[in-house]
Amino acid sequence: MAEYFWDRMYDTERYRYGKDPNAFLAQVASDHLSAGASALCIGDGEGRNGVWLAGQGLEVTMVEPSVVGARKARAFASERGVEARIIEEFFPTDALGDALFDAVALIYIHVPEDTLGEIYRAAAARLAPGGLLVVEGFHPDQVANARPSGGPRDTSMLLTAERLRRELIDHDETSLELVSLEEVTVELKEGRGHSGPADVVRMIARRV
Image (cartoon, rainbow, N blue to C red; front, top):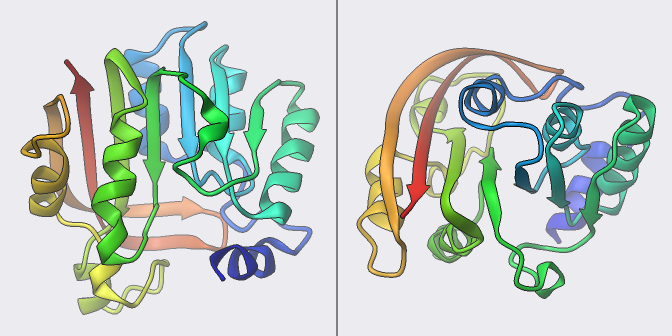
């Protein structure tokens, strides 16, 4: 079970991916979001992204299936003196009701190939008009280049620009316009879990 895997990964005093937010998400938020905006962080683990966004004055909801991850996210939010709603479930979830958000973040959300399109389109459906979908994930070159900086070894779970375009931008079920989409090599400094050179895909798309 995925939640059992992540419970074991997070079951340590340290924060596996550190306490700083993903650099790409932080830059997007700084450029495009203001205090009072709403944000949904899907699979936010120990809360590094959601807690940071809440610290910038955003109204944050996190969806995290790992009981251990969610517990650490709550402790982290308390430590930083911020409030965030944390839902201990897999996404998509009915616990969100009919809520729509100004931003939805999918940061290193790698799932089996046959469910990726469904999950990512469900995330896009949670955007309010004008809202931003922010994606960063590992590219198959991460495996081809034997990078030690993290990610699944199963390349079917990894992301390409072409796949994101097909599953989201060009798909009949979404109403997204592309803002930016690139495949790049970056230097990750996200705790022990993501450290060093990495081959990633980054996308910003807007709900129209």
